Length: 334
Image (cartoon, rainbow, N blue to C red):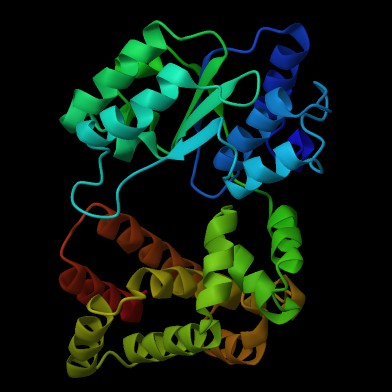
């Protein structure tokens, strides 16, 4: 795992390189940024940069030796990754910390010259409302053993206890570029015909783009977005109420909102004369062209903005059925 394998994060990676070259690597880091942009990969690359026998400050680990391979595969005894539980409040219980994490912090490294504890999604695994485990970890951050390093990752730094944050060197990670997402999808064998849609819906997050590719059904989602647009344009109250109810209970509700935003943006582009290769939803170019003959670009742009607002409202836990019902009525008037 090489440091230059971490895409589109020059600030964070350059800071780590400088610290490695100067021999002044902080004992604890907080990697902050959206999910799926390389924070966990960077933590493994940092561990490889310290543990790999062939490592150098510029490239980090060699990426070929047994040490690097075991770090990537999660099998190295001196690199421990923990994260939220799958059930309940998802926080790491104090019992688990005492039984499995604390012995690692007391006795590692077992094989190499250093040890790394990586806590993924620290805002969920160590939340302020369940602070017992976070406070237990804090004691180890305050008095770290030589050669023991900590990396905490989070999307929301403000949800990590201030006492933990203050002991960490904070590095910020941004969203990935469309070109980088394209390369990642191509490397994973995703068909070219769906890559543009996955990239457009991924919001700069590689894991989201790959998840969309695995789930599939993007053509169906585009068709449903066009159907919702038709229902809103017809403005028949009964059909709108039925559609809003079905939409609110759909497990892919939020993805359909995202597709609908892209649909209206592409309709606006088509109305302005943009070629199909500029569309986010390229496989639906014919459907979009038809809609552009009915909706002028300004109306399509207004509809995209309305959908964006509802998407933000739903993120704040408003009633989904009421919000979607109001959205479909508003789209018909836009």
